[in-house]
Image (cartoon, rainbow, N blue to C red; front, side):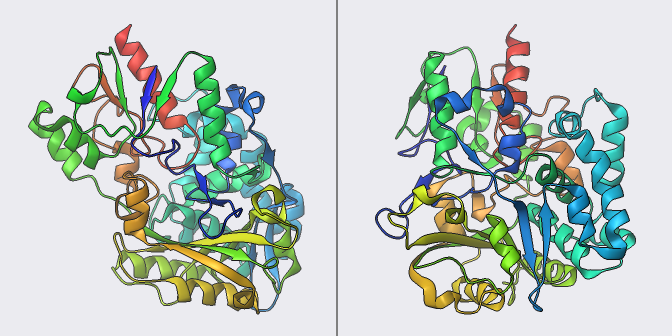
Length: 445
């Protein structure tokens, strides 16, 4: 097996680099990996034997509020629900049955349309997953904290929270938080890629970097080709080899919101007003359900949110191998913006952090920013800063990247697509490649 990588290092979104100062190891894109540790495919690989070590935390994610309190997603559903008072029973009823059967739900949900192995488990998930987050949370919960916590988790998908199936992402990631946690890999997300490359080489595979492929004619003779690229690059690579109908579908593929990201080197930990924020590597900064929904609506309307919903990671609270000494920390945060936006969101992101952590700006030693164009320059799959491989509305979730019985197959019999533009979509979980490889091998045989 030969893997050709255009960049200097493999990994795409799962890479680490010294973005701010020497010795400060930052994650270039992905940082926290509930779907990595929970992936039905990655769990079958001996990645720990190749250097991958997952670091868990007391809580999966925290969500602070202006009054100094915080919603906390703990590993225990019961412990999490207990914080929600009169909404405790509703929260447990929503999550506990899914957590009890989480791996079977993942095996059926993280893939293309098919006859499920466990139809009752998938139905229990799907009935709620197909709803809009705003409708589900307001129907189930009467208080601010569970509504905001679930909304912040669902907002990872960038879909407007008023649209279905935005609730699916809240359920998938919430389920993971209770079942396996939201861990970080020791040494940074590049550790995942290094372990995968090491395992591939142990099987006789080869990875060649700094090798850009502009056409199928650039490839050596081979029986099967798997393209880890989005529709825009598929059109560039295959061009007129594809029939007009398929080309038309790829041209109409819709990309989602862009991303603006800031990395910081800090002279101490983030000074959260709420001490619960120190229990997790992930902190969601968005206040209420209504605030988070409004920020998404602004971005989808082509406006840069004045008060963005911010997702923050603080890995060095739990992994000190990423900084050069005992004094310093790193953190990064990003927000959703219109696809391809050129607006500098640094001050707005830092204002949101300062809102919940007064004195944060005084701890910044150095910063590094990446607007959508820079993210795409580093990884061509992040079109316009879209980190999910395409919009995840209901129609495109079921037909990505085109309407076909086998979404991984192209009209060329030996060419398949295995990127996040295929089911189940974005995330470091390996399931797109797993299903694409199975489809390719089935056709070859």
